[in-house]
Length: 150
Image (cartoon, rainbow, N blue to C red; front, side, top):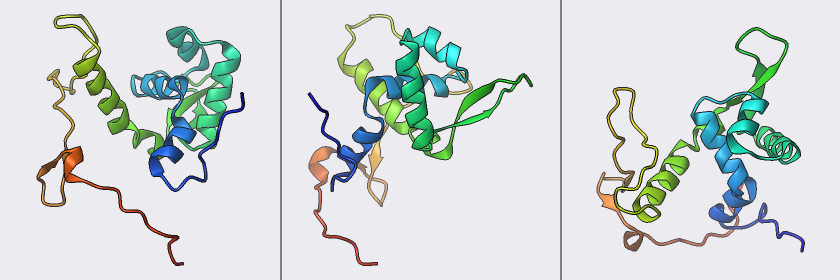
């Protein structure tokens, strides 16, 4: 069955999922945040087939989420580094992590923790209003707009 593409969708969520919404791409980005940079390290950590990893990395580079840079050890190899666009995915990864922690683990079940540089647990993500008041889904609505005038 052919996959439906959403690259031209009116919905920003659909476009984002079309770009980076498959689990391998998000796990690659997660691993990049954890400091992985080399093809072999991604492959070993994820247990993903080399061809599939190559395809996902190529797409993430095309999307300017990752970029190829000279190897940090000075060797002739290249490594993958997060671009600004890639680093902007950090709250998405943290949000998925926090949702998973809250809903997919039994009480007391072991899992990795996200901590700051001082070793303190990271606080819960909060969506603030322009005035700083925390928002929930019921405080928002999607406003449909027509094509923007240029």
